Length: 343
Image 1 (cartoon, rainbow, N blue to C red):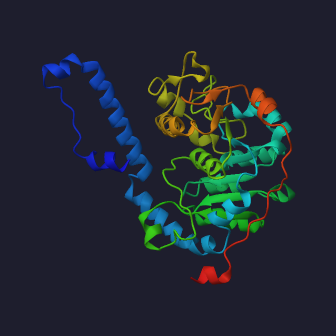
Image 2: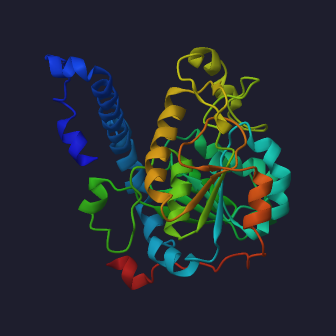
Image 3: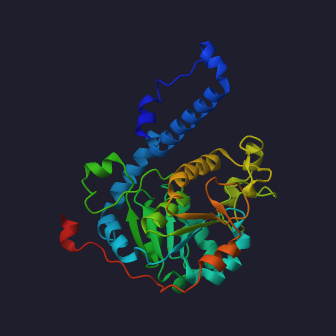
């Protein structure tokens, strides 16, 4: 990525000779690949200085919470290889139909849940093991403005260290367990925190964060559900009971025919969006490498095809990959001792 970023300002392609004309089609395909890689690299590193400054501000505000809560080294030590299979729950329109099966098999897999899917799972009494949040604005914090009482016991909320302070206030109000994970910014390294904290890098959505954590804990199988990355046939952007549905009104009409993608199963096309298309391309880039040592299943049964994944019905995955109950809740995590915190 860094190589492409170095040349991103000066890259230019012009077909100026017979050679270029002869191989016009191949060269244009290569050009599209290079431009796509540059775009993805820029987005992963960040392209908004105001956004970055907000992240630094939130990181400083949350620094004491980062130091006084469990960290990645303890997380890895206590939770490594406890399960063969991880289910990554996103909030696409297809999630709704998968909920009964997810509830039936919830104790046989590690469940990583997007912040926006958490209230939906709570409503159906499906307890995730991890609920993750990546974004820094206060809109997503409303996903935690609730009190599910006993349901929250045993759930670990994993937050990027740049989240809004309101997120932590909501979690602490109801004594929910959480840990903060720093992002791989230069400011993080400037503070010399890499000795104890493993940063996350290249995350553009909470689904990517969940996927990264599932790999970090060395799961052999990763299952996607609710990962539509597209609008449904009835033009819905998210699953039923998604709390921010009103914020997406009119988006289908704005995106229609602009970002079509190959449909799940390879038959026909679906309507997507600029960011969903970008998210899918990043997944495909990661999966092209990861599927050499991880079985990655897309069991969404809807939405867009994610190249490189194994498309299977969710029922097949449950019956063939989820055999025995896991020992849940997983071991409790402790923060750094006071001496390490003071270093």
